Amino acid sequence: MEGLTRTELDKAESRDAALGKGPLRPRDAATLVLLDRSGGQTMVLMGRRHARHVFMPGKFVFPGGRTDPADSRVPVAEGLHPAEQEKIAKGTRIGPARARAIAVSAVREAYEEAGLLIGRRGRFETMKPDWQSFAEHGVQPSLGCLRFVARAITPPGRVRRFDTRFFACWRSDVAVVLPDGGPTDELQEIVWLPLAEARSADLPVITRTIVGEIEKRLDGDPGLEPGGPVPFFRMVHNRFVRDIL
Image (cartoon, rainbow, N blue to C red; front, side):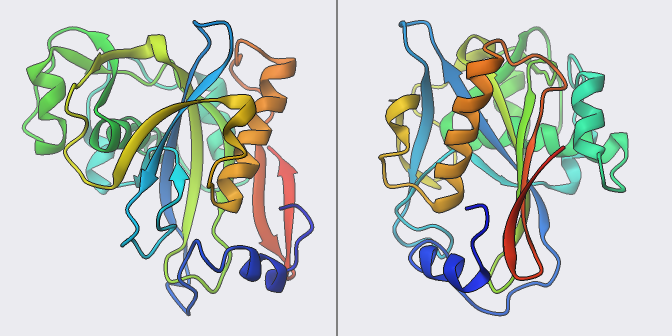
């Protein structure tokens, strides 16, 4: 994506997102990239979006979605690693509470879309309906395992725009996998794909780009240590650029 003009990017994404005026300000969003290398190769969890969706219909994506205001008030067993929190806030006016809320939304979306409860075994009580499965299965949501691996802002001219932070964690960080999946119908199909082959799937342009970035990160940092380099994609002066946070 780096170096593409807005016209070139509009053409590349013409089948992925509805073009239009849309909101001027991107909304905070988070995505969860779940990785597994227990079988000798690195696998990544992805799901196919319903064809009826306006945003990226029929494409394979990572579980994710918009950050809700209530996400800032969800108790967690462990907060973000300080180095990760610092990276999320870099170059922004984001404070600790908002950074935490964005990370919490990645955990919530992984549950809602893929039926994955990320956290630690332990008593968890909440009145929030979005988190009742954590309480029912005795899982305390946790952010300590999350690694901030990429950021991307949807270009102007889309019906919906998001400022998305991509978080990665390992399959071993999932305390419970719900057999019937999550409660939403955002994703039709949940699959594990070899990371090396995932870019050949039917992916949106940005998702394919992030898969490549994660491959690069793992080559030099197989353990995803806290505070690692984070690629940041956005449109500047009518051209898509890649910076490092």
